[in-house]
Image 1 (spheres, rainbow, N blue to C red):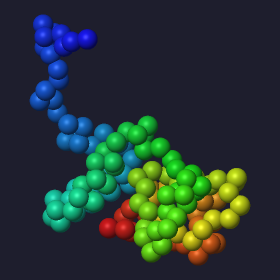
Image 2: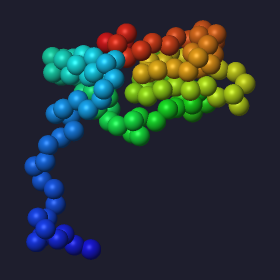
Image 3: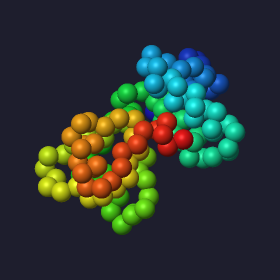
Length: 128
């Protein structure tokens, strides 16, 4: 397969989706504004990555279950997991390990289980 040059070739120079905020959610708009400021003023790659992920569509911000999160956070005590998405409960997991999690949102069950195990649940604006 090749590039159809008569039709204009590949898309070069088109606007980025990060130029304009597409979401109607006021909380997401404020988070984008906050992390845009932090990425510009601190030259932090972390803030730039979070900003990029905040601009993504809902399909590209899938929820993560507690079991998968606990697998990723094993052997990482003292660190905070940052998820640009929702953290959901996993009833198949019998006990939840102690972990610190920062996310866009939590289901009630996930928040209860993380806090019951001695961990903490914070949002992205509290992290900044």
